[in-house]
Length: 241
Image (tube, rainbow, N blue to C red; front, side, top):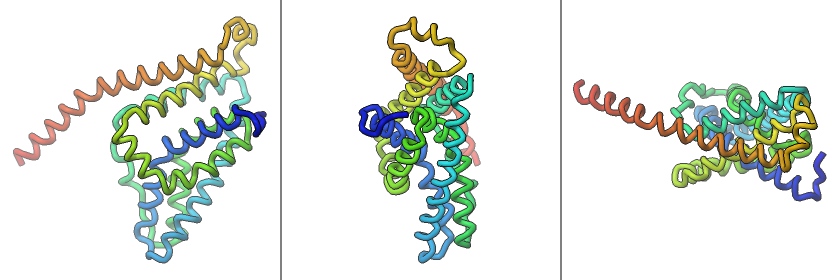
C-alpha cells in the first residue's frame, strides 16, 4: 500500500490522471451525444447525474479488477491487454460515436451515459488498476481528480493530440510502461528469477513502453498506404457518380 506522503503515491496519481485523460477523451463526446435531445434546462442535470453514475460504476469495476490482479497469471494477461490498448492508441481511429443514442428523457440520457461509459471504459479500468498498485485510495483519488479534466478539458486534450502527435505516442508508451511493470509483479513468476535481474521492474517497464511504441508505429505505417488507397477509390467512385 502506497503512503500518501511518498513521491511514488503522487507519481501513481499522475499516471492515473493521464490514463483517464488519454483513454477517457471520448467520454465527453458520448455525454454530449446522449444529452443532445434533452431540453436545455435538463442538459446540465443529465450531464451531472450521468457522470456521477459513470464514476460510481467505474470505481466498482476497478475494485474488482484490483482483486483479480492479485491472482496468478492475471497481471500478465492484464499487461498484454494494456500493450494492445497502447498500440491501438497509436493507430488511426474511425468515428465510433454514430451509434450513441440520444434520449428525450432525463432518465434515458443518464442511462445511456452510464451504459456507454461502462462499455467504453474497460480499457481504462484495466490501465488504472495496473497503475494503482493495489491501492483503492489511489483509484478513487485519481478518478475524482481526473473526472472534471475529462469532462471539461477533453476537447482541449483532443486538440493537443491533433496538433502534437507526440502526446499520443507518450500515452501509448505510458500504457506499455505500466504493462511491463505489471508482468514482473505477477505472483506466477518465481521470485528467484526477478531477484537475479537488477532493476527488473524498471527494465521490464522500459521494454514494455518501447514495445508498444515500436509496434504501434509499425502498424500505423503499414495502415497509412492502405488508407490512402481507400480514400482514392472513394474519391474516384464519387467522381464517377
